[in-house]
Image (cartoon, rainbow, N blue to C red; front, side, top):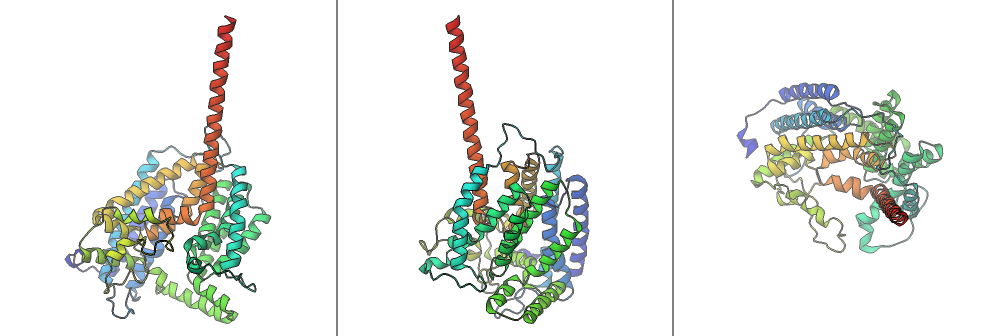
Length: 464
């Protein structure tokens, strides 16, 4: 096993080394990768700082590690976390190199809010947005009324049986938010759109699950605002607001349950205060992703087998509802295969992170190579989008992908489909149908031009 062969490594040295690597990569990305706040490099730096760097320092300060208080399990050791921090730094260096090389191979992007269009540019179709809204909005509102937690309004008495817990019914509750995001993207930040969106986000925040329903729209709005305003970085008040939302993000599930249970304001404030204290001291369960990465390495080594890319195979069965196929393979089937009672990561519903999945597939070579490919690929998508007009399908698609990057870095490659495609389905439908509409019109113009050319040739021969 890898972790049994490497020597002990002091957690304080690992934290110091990580800080040097993060600072160096941030400087290199800023100088050579044309960094902006919506650039994939910025997203990964934020992810690394929040969940890897901060975790190293909290463990060095004595924070309990994963499974420390889990009966019958073996706690992840500080040495394991220290080495996981080193491998995380390798991944950061790798993704930085990929982003820099990609930036050097792409010309500087024009102004963010670029109105210039050409006949070869696929643009968002307002007709498509109207039709998708006409279908998705009533379904989403109905789903919220039936299954959502709405204060002072009881849910409708509709029993779907075993389908009540289906994720296909759950995702539709998010659709009204997504429709408003698309409308704001096209028509701008008007009060008649922003106010209902704010109320819906507040409603999403008290559902007691799936905090991404608040996080992803906010990041999407940030990307939209920056590209419309032509700004490379958010304003100071936006940064302050995001920090406040981050503080509320950690206890959001518990706050949702408390609101549904009718708890007092003082109890709610106590929960926020306790959560803030946990975050400051690094003891929040939501900050243990470095521990989970280290645990994934241990489980893969104990299993003594790499998966060589097969971890993504369960995506083939994703569209099939579990209600029709109860034995359907889990999306994290590889975690099921390497499950171990000593480190019950699978049963606890934990995530391996992108780096953990890379290690599960190819070992240390995966940690060194896959982040490079991810960085280069994301950089390519980013620059292609920034070279397109604001209303182009490609620019809109990057906004969909960009707001999901933190989730992808946290959960792995499966999230490339689960978050941008499944959970944001109406936005993907708008992009796809707009592109298909553009291709159809382009084909019709080509056929019309060809017919006109043939008619002119016939007329020329007749006159001759």
